Length: 198
Length: 198
DNA sequence: CATGTATGAATGAATG
DNA sequence: CATTCATTCATACATG
Image (cartoon, rainbow over all chains, first blue to last red):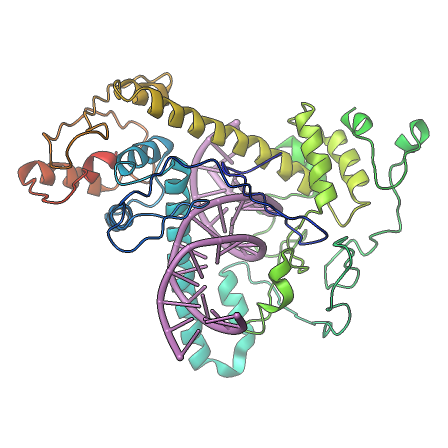
């Protein structure tokens, strides 16, 4: 199903395989919201929320004021108010805060690591560990030098056999079901939901 | 996080030290060519389950069929079957349903309110009440209902019983609210943040 | 017109 | 079940 909150037909094909042709249908006219919205040149294209300057300002102010993760009702409120400046949905507000917070944190982390990098050139191992901050995982990145199927795959059927993925080293050794096969002998690519529903 | 997942090896803070199970450790090349061919979506990197289209389809179908909270057995079954299309673990299935359900719900809520917004312009009071659904607080937020002038209007305030402020219970909102009443000299298309803050 | 950057959107994975 | 974090995908926009 069109999971997520995409109201528009922005169907994203997770794997650019085959002829997906997203064909983003000329989305339902979004009720010309863009009209004169942001004074600052804002090509109001539809398909993805394009915040007005005023909207951004307000959001930023709120953020600066300390609001980081608004509750649902706060989101509603903000959204309502911001709708005054142009088209906006609550999910936009939601995402905005989500992203803003995350990126700020990310940036901070980056800077931190970079500092470390300057000082700890030689110990670039600990960098990762620091990144994990407490989890202290062993990075161990033996990369397979990926010289193989880097080109492309006719299909996307992900069968990455050789990763350094920990366990489960047997992707295909095991065809499908166990007991279900008794009842139905389906062909491979179609597994039966009715049973798994059980 | 209770009985349901015990079978998947989903430990809750196992030992605070070594995640025995999935052990994320994506640890992508620190700087390397992250971009790379990734563009086509579906980075083949592992560390996090990246469902196949087929897998998603099946899961979605199951969901549509009414399955919302599969039991452990069901999860096992589904996982087994889906493993045909690619690497997958039970916990992935578990999480998938968890997320899918939650997000659909969230979306629903938002859309609902959004619709209310459209229809109940005139009664912008009841919107909040609906949002609270059960707590029925009096919001009383007289707002310009996107029609007239942008000039500042009598800032009306509401009496919002913010009884469930979590971490957001920062002193900001307080100060903001008070402060603004004193000097409301927003010359701009001012919408009141302090209000929307709550 | 290609490449890089900022950011909206989505979703897997947790945690309480 | 809700809420949050992290990571990634996709797109708008700027630059050369």
